[in-house]
Every structure is written in C-alpha cells, then in structure tokens.
Image (cartoon, rainbow, N blue to C red; front, side, top):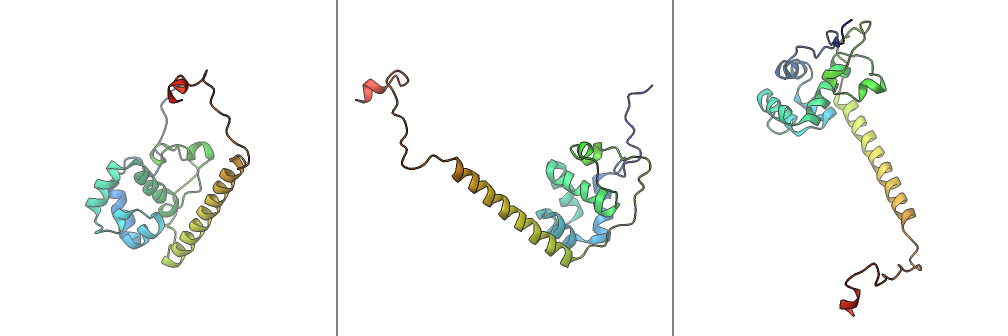
Length: 158
C-alpha cells in the first residue's frame, strides 16, 4: 500500500505558473483578471513576465490565481472544506471530477461581485465596531487604582 498522494487529476499538476497565466490571459485578458481578482499586477503595466515574477514572490496572490484557474477557468466544483484549507496545488481532485469549459465572465458580473464584497466588508466592519463598543466598560465606572504592591515604582512617583 502506498502513502503517496495522487495529484494527477489536479489540473495544476505539472503546469507552470507562466503557462497557467498564458492560458487565462489569452482567454479572459488582464482587465477581467484584475476585475475578479483585484491584484494590481494585472492592472499596472500588465505583462505575463511581470505577473509571474510577482506571483512567485507572493503566496496569497498565487493561490488566488490558482484557485481562479481551477474554479472559473476549469469549472471544477467547489472543493470540500477540508481540501479548501489547502493551497490549490495541494488539493486532491476526485477522479470523477473532470474540468469543464471556462466560465463566461463579464465586467458587469465583476462589478456586481465587487459591490457584493464591499457590502459584506462594510457589514463585517460594522459588526466588529459593535462588538468593540459592547466590550468597553461604561464611562461612569473608573479603572481600579494601581496598588503599590503591583507597581514597584508607585512610591517613587509620589
């Protein structure tokens, strides 16, 4: 029995980052990639070479692009929660899942997605600030005075 994991069904297996970028840029273009992924290397003077250089140095961005490749370009179903915790190259794709045609993406869909993300972020920030306010002590309750036992410099300050 072998303990070796079979990654053969993962579309990223054996695919270089440069070839991955060439495929998705040829199909979608830099504008769509920037609109969906919000990574500046697809917006500011975009080129395959500069994007590869940036993505090799930046794990979070590379994983974001690889996940986009798997789930938008190859149309694989969403990974299980356990597999989703792993980087895209380390995910095991079940043998019955076959890559499909690339998803049809548009700038209008990207704008709707950006608005949805902004709304969620605003809700998250509002909930966070409400929790912070709820955690503060009321203003009419004063802080306990530091005793000289806990503060070795208390006598010196007097």
